[in-house]
Image (cartoon, rainbow, N blue to C red; front, top):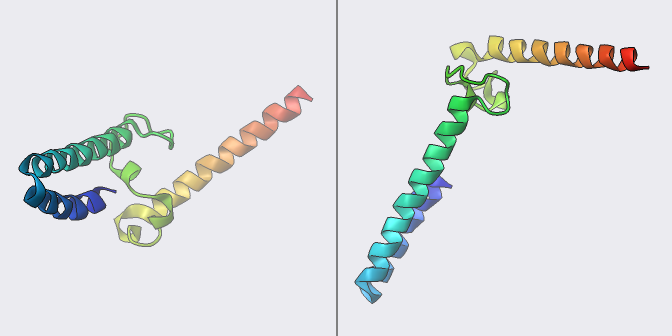
Amino acid sequence: MVLVSLLVGPIVASVLWNVDERLGIGLAGATLALVAVLLLGRLRGAASGRGDGDAGEGDGWALVPEWQYEGRFAEAGGISRGEQERALREIDERAEEERTRERD
């Protein structure tokens, strides 16, 4: 979304600039605001560790999709990171099974 905004926004703004300068300036400003909001949201989500249980860890892995651990990021520790996350999921699943058995 950020790349599309950065690529398309200036082109459309330049066309609108020829029609009316205020429209071009307005669209350019809106494009910059959209990019800033999207990037800040992404960085805030990564810093909080949203979705992966690493709240506040801040090691940068929150930015990497899990499916890229053993591909592009394998040499940067992605393989071991993927193994760790699988092990944690297995532990969570076993704990949930134990809780279910205790209830029954």
